Length: 474
Ligand code: G6P
Image (cartoon, rainbow, N blue to C red; front, side, top):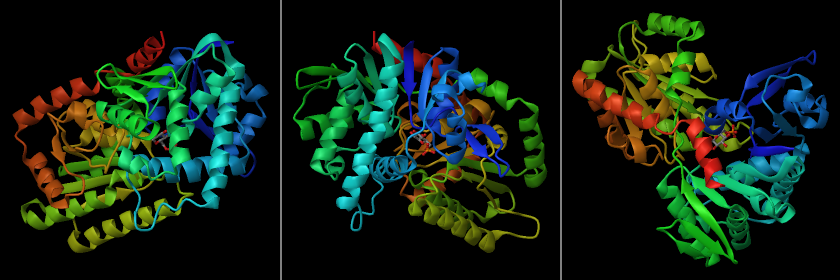
């Protein structure tokens, strides 16, 4: 039986299966997994996650009780849940990614969406079942009085379900996303909004990445549940139970990042990139191709910058890495196409025989991303809204001279705002101006700001973040 457990939709590894049935294991992507993989393993935590693909399902089916570590994979203690594909698909794509993600990132095109009808109700049932499958697995695996850390918007109902099953457990929930203000959160059907809030309040401790998201959550509890909120003490009391609210700004492990970024595969990507761009200045962005990351407006800003500053033609290159994400959703496929269209327009307007103003790459290549960080003069991070954004934290650690252009709507702005060039993510002209200021920032100022950004980015590395979560549970 385990004394510390962690649950999340995506696990630290995923599998692909080749035509001849052979399985290949890869590291999982996204902020949550990059932050927690190393530490969960070192701390001997049992991680419970869902099988996301056919490859994952084949791996699980060959593992006793879904325990991949016991089937010989080098994953750390890991149980993967083989949830029925239709249930998984509705819970993950329809509810988690098309509803809760959209609500908390304010992504809806309001005149047309959302539409909550019978289809939504069916999908919501699946989301309940999926959360129930996690609660059941955790209840089976947890020792008496164990501490369980439930992660993110995929699993908002699990804390209350698990508490009903196992009142002896100490349960935390952590949101890696922003939280919507009550007037936007209440787009959800009333009973669904209640169920989400009460699901999280089933935990003893509900954690957020910044004070702003924690406050929005407490505001929703007060407005929609009539719960008693003590903003100063950060507690929510509802139906006689108290949930403590915590703010833990997940940061990066600078040493580990440097160690990885110094490996030969990264060095050879650096050499190749250098070959490609020569001694031109580099504006870098690295994202999932994600609606909230605001890649199109970032490209439009670069275009305006080129329009306004012909003196930079031939002297700067924008490296935009936008690796694929959530392609089961039509909005994401369309978004990827508009990113590509916008990039092509920039090429058509500005490229010359010997200058490529923009290199857009849509494949995931972790060592190449690390190489780009190391070479960046400017890092552009301009999300519409973001829980934290670890790219904004990784860049200043790895680049000796990068200036950070950062959206004020990213959680990271709370910690990095003083030394970044903050932008309104909708203001393309403002962002273009910030790109220019970042490029011409004097050397001494850039060094000073970067050092402070690095210190802030590494203030709460994942080891300490995890320890803080556990301490909060007593
Ligand atoms: C965000 C979420 C994570 C999620 C990641 C990648 O960082 O907070 O929970 O894992 O995006 O998204 P995906 O849908 O590919 O897991």
